[in-house]
Structure formats: structure tokens, C-alpha cells
Length: 439
Ligand SMILES: NC(=O)c1ccc[n+]([C@@H]2O[C@H](COP(=O)([O-])OP(=O)(O)OC[C@H]3O[C@@H](n4cnc5c(N)ncnc54)[C@H](OP(=O)(O)O)[C@@H]3O)[C@@H](O)[C@H]2O)c1
Image 1 (cartoon, helix red, strand yellow):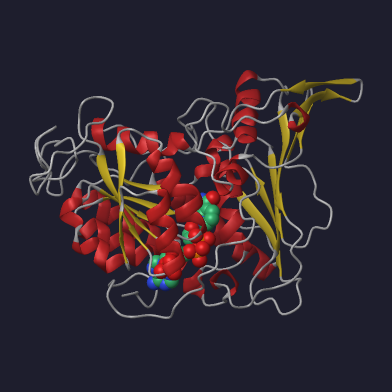
Image 2: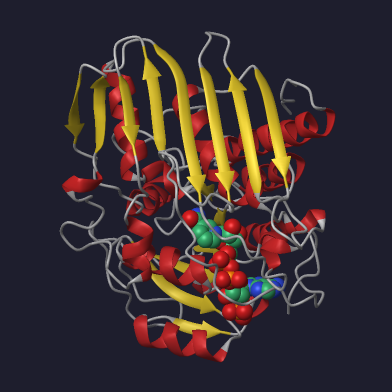
């Protein structure tokens, strides 16, 4: 069964959203913490007690009351394999096996010994076949309802469905007592994202937003350069996620204009760029945006510019576009001592789409020809790009559940990003600079 719309019950049958995987999706990066934990607008409203059960039960290792004792037999008497620390891996149910589910979540989950990809929900025969072939240890069920019906055999749910179902599936998973990961954008509004965070908090469950691009290699590099003061005083932070895709495929769910679809590039790529900027620079004082539809037949935005103004004088300029026939630099940072300029996208998405495993040596490393440059017109040096590590998100998720550490990307961070998106929309409508609301 598929929910019909935005947040709500999970059951009602709904419009079939598009099924084709997104095109060469990913692109620009996101940028988090140099190490693994992004600094950034911290806050972690969501995860009120990782590892605690739904009603404040003590940690169970698996995170939910009633779990079998560590290393004991499974619920149905089957022994469960153990993870790296001798505890059974957390069992993960994945809702959706399109681009995000198949290329990102499933291989990343499978690469973390503390997690086990237990169930995959897809109704599509070809996707079911691929899921069984690539992840033979996982059961395949037709939809989110079927997956949640077996919630007592799971510890965590991952929502990788079209945007309009994120909140409904997320709430249903929390209601079933599961820790939660929701892909971006977490919701079509900051208010809905807050509802999810509150539901997780009330149940003492860990909930996180999949802002994987915090762990893009170029974003990690920018983070390191800023931390090291390599640019001197930062004046301007430019970040682009541009593509040349001038033809609209109107059937795709991302091209639908209903507000609950959260379609268009501002929600899609903007979620990444805004999250990176907030992570590195903190919340902006003011927002200005230009939001356009350029492609013939487009019903959603496909060419967006956002300016974030910071109290200290730093300006962050973000571009996301489907109509860029020649791409600008992915990052260009201007400082009082030097500039850093970096072209090209983080290699992880392309590698994952090609079937590379994220736990193979060298995964996420960028070849020398892709590295950015640091310096001035008088001379520049090549700066090795940090290895990208999307898998850090799921390592963080396992830690958050097991050890009650903060979730890798708290829902509060995603909510702040949505507040900036909402401010950008108001700005573009009014042609004015606006202050983001904070809930
Ligand atoms: N973080 C990233 O880098 C990244 C990259 C790409 C996408 N995403 C996000 O991931 C989410 C999914 O995007 P996608 O590109 O993977 O989409 P997609 O290729 O269209 O796949 C959507 C998947 O969701 C499933 N689904 C579950 N409930 C559904 C329902 N009620 N109606 C329609 N489909 C339903 C589909 O099931 P069937 O298989 O049964 O059709 C399909 O497997 C989006 O929120 C997107 O923004 C994130």
C-alpha cells in the first residue's frame, strides 16, 4: 500500500510516483566535518535517547525493547550473526530500491558490520530481482506496509521513497518502534520535519536525515581548509551543483508541482548545498534567492541561486541548475590570503552506481587531476582532496543507536535547512531579502 500524500497514515493507496531512477543524480557535494562528525549547526532534537526503547527502556543493544539478548538466538530461534563488537548487528529495513535505495543506502548499510540489511521494500519486479541478486541475505517485500508489518524483526527503518511519502513512512516506522533514517528532503516543510523529530523524541528513538554529501571529499577538504585557516579570513563561499539536462521528463515525480511532492531543484540539490553551507558556516542572518523555471514544459524550478548573508560579513552563494551548458567550479572560496577552487563532483555516487563497494580500499579517493587549487594569481598549489566517506553516515547511525551518541545528521539540522528553503521561496516571490524563520 502506498500513502497518498504528505504526512499522514501510511495505509491509503496513493498515486504511483515515478519509478525510474533519477538520472545521473548526485553531483555536487556536501560538506561536513573534516573528520567524521560534522560540526555545524548542531542541535539534535531528534535523537532523544539512542539505544533506548520506545518508552524509555534501558538500552538493549538492538535498541528496542524485547530484542533478544546480545548474541542470543533471533526472535524466532535463529542464531543471529554478530557484529564487530560481538553484538548482533542492528537489522535494517529499507523502504525503496530506486536510485537512492539501490545505489546509496543498500551498499552503504551492507558495508557497516554493525548493521545488517534485513529487508528491502520494492514492488518493481526488475528491482526485486536486482535486490535479491546483490543482497541475497535480505528479504524482499512489496511495500512499506509489508516491511512495517515485520517491524518486530527490525531495529531501524530507512525511508528512500519519493519525497511525498517521507513523513508518513517515517512516522509509521517510529510508531512501530524503529530507529529512523529519512533521505533528503526529510519533509516538504520545516513544520513536518519538526513533527518527525518530536515523534522520535517522544519515543526515545534515534532519527537522522540522510545528508550524505556532508561526506563528499571536496566538502571535507573545504572544511579542513577552513579549520586550518588556509584561506585567511573567509569573504565568499561559492558552491555549485549544476548540470546540463535541458529536457524535462514530465512523468518523473521530481517534476511534479504539488507542494507535497517537494519537487524541483531547490528541494533536491538545494537540500545538499544548503546543508553543507549551514554545516560549515552556521545559520545565516538573511536569505536572498532567485528561483526560475527555464526548461520548456518545466513545472518545477530548475535554475536557482541563493545568497546567504552572515552576521560576520561572509557571503555564501549557492547555485543549482539543470540548464548549465558549461559547469562552473563545484567550490570557489575567496579569503584574505588565498582562494580555493575545485571543479568536478565527488566520485562516490558514480562509483556506487557502477556497483563498487564502499568498503573496498581506495573507495572515495579522487584522482590527482581532480584536485582543487589553493593560492593566488601569483601561484597556486594542488590540494589533495580528502577521501569521501558516505559510509561514515551509517557508522554514525550504528553508534548513535548503540552508544547513545548524537545521530550523524540530527533532524534538527534538516529542519534548519528546510527553514532556509522556505525563506528562499519567500525571498524569490517578493524579490526581497528575508530573515529565515526559526521554529
Ligand atoms: N542523498 C542522495 O544523494 C540522494 C540521491 C538520490 C535520491 N535521493 C532521495 O531519495 C529519495 C528517492 O529517490 P530515488 O531517486 O531513489 O527515487 P526513485 O528512483 O523513483 O525510487 C523510489 C523508490 O521508492 C519506492 N516507493 C516506496 N513507496 C512508494 C510510493 N508510495 N510510491 C512510489 N514509490 C514508492 C519505489 O518503490 P518501487 O520500487 O516499488 O517502485 C522505489 O523503489 C528521494 O527523497 C530523493 O530525494 C537522495
